[in-house]
Amino acid sequence: MLFKALSAAVYGIDAYPVEVEVDISAGLPNFTTVGLPDAAVRESRERIKSAIKNCGLDFPFQNITVNLAPADVKKEGSGFDLAIALGILGTTGVLLKTDLKNTLFLGELSLDGGLRPIKGALSIAAMTRQKSIQRMVLPVENASEAAVVEELQVYGLRSLPEVLDFINETREFTPAKVDSAALLAQASQYSVDFCDVKGQLHAKRAIEVATAGGHNILMIGPPGAGKTMLAKRIPTILPPLTFDEAIQTTKIHSVAGVLEPGAGLVGTRPFRSPHHTISDAGLIGGGAVPRPGEVSLAHNGVLFLDELPEFQRNVLEVLRQPVEDGTVTISRAAMSLTFPSRFMLAAAMNPCPCGFCNDPSRECTCTPPIIQRYVSKISGPLLDRIDIHIDMPAVRYQELRQDSGGESSDQIRERVIKARQRQLRRFPGEKIYCNAQMSSRQIRKYCNISADCERLLESAMTRLGLSARAHDRILKVALTISDLDAADAIGTAHISEAIQYRSLDRNYWA
Image 1 (spheres, one colour):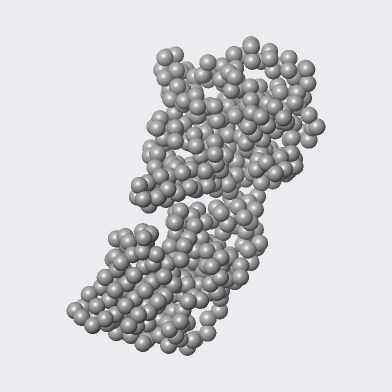
Image 2: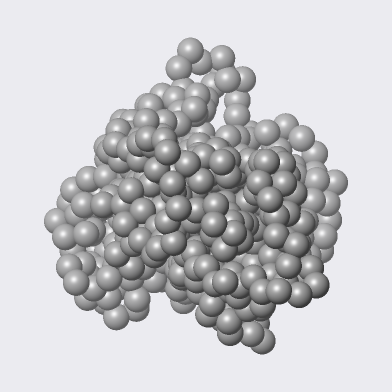
């Protein structure tokens, strides 16, 4: 006898339907799964057998064949357990309904018949609605996540017997309901604030400029200067996540398996801070079946690289494509997947291995060749993609003892939002969302400067020994500063401030 149930799998961050076909025929007891299953899918037969028995149901000791269609796409994960178990029970007459084409089933079975959460529930729910499938049954822990998708009946159940009652209609079940706007507002709360930071007014201003224009930033200073503390507060002054951004961010986190249990949406800007021992596959994603890496988990948020020169050279070099294009493509022999990775890069480093170069209160023990080797670990192409370099001295005692750290994140965020709105009006239909994404052609179009600004920029390029790549970076940053000031054109004050953020070119990389 043949029985069919509908399930789904995730490919990248998108999902596709999988039809589970179960056939039971006479013969020696055997359980065969076909359709390119991976090890987790093949092992499901032991989980399913124990779950059915422990729920007080009979498991057929016959020849069982399970086909996962389409058969030419590799299936991975344990989310097919529930659909396969229903197919087996359907052939034995336990299910009163034989037509389940309008319901999609997902879930991993425990040995006692309980349902365990799966990855990628939001992506699968979006696909389910797109395919006009009316209902979706999955573990209760994933219900809030999947219920974010409107016009879809999502039922979060706890065990295989509950699923049987749902299909046979012996009990009443209510679909999960989520107020997306309220859920997003509830999730968009930060536990840190810029007013916690004492001193470092120059660095705070540089970070405000960086977030207003979407510029990448590099902070250089001795240990204890507050580089990490400032970086952790960058998401608090970025514009709030829109609903579409929250959906896309949640999809990535769900597929990667890092979404908090019971969480419906990721409501805050992601902040990812990988350790410097991370591999290139861990940073950009990888594996036999590629999974999102740190650059994709930081999508719509901040990727913070602390102790930048301590990262392996090959790890830093793989950052070029995601920083430049906002996507990362991972190619394998069997597939090629593209993950979104549009993030703001924030990096921090010491000025030398001991950390006290140019520190007035501590003596540096590093020689010039050692310092040069240390900073040269950051290649020119990567440095070319960082618009702002800021020097951060140690915080003075008087600043540490201040009662207040200054403006709150909400006050700074208001200015950042207004600057971003000006940029959106500047680039209608150009698929550019901030000044940092401008190309050379667009810089010439939008960064018109006066004769006084021309002379100031020429003098800085000559006297400070700035590189040609610094020229475009100065103009982009100056345009962002003018947006923060709500100015109609770039002025000399904007150029002067932007030049300050490139002085490290001369000090360290000249």
